[in-house]
Length: 169
Image (cartoon, rainbow, N blue to C red):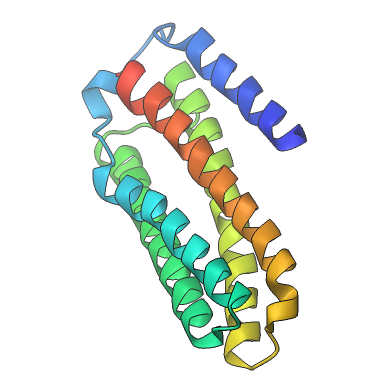
């Protein structure tokens, strides 16, 4: 609930300051829809669910495949975010100090990215435990909790995508 409240504050701030920058660039001038990254991140909810379902059936091999796929898809999302930020900073001149849009954009998308990184670290630890034979069917509930965190991160991205890239443009 606390994480959801933090994101709500950032969503409201982003919407409140939308269009109030005194200088450019504006979202319409520099933002493109991050389709590839979005598909990767949303697909990772399927693969983490697959991993949990496999572990519930004591299928450790498929659990490892599901976790590896989730980590790969999450990493691809982060690479696409890094590429977007590189383009915005070096090609478009948009930094956190440029204007209100830059400040709220990097704060909101950066907050989400930090949650993705935390999730990737935890998923990688679960993957290592699975590959080393320490993940067993009795750990299903723990992996389920981790998958709920990952689903939360994905659901937050849907809202970020809608607010920043659809409504905000």
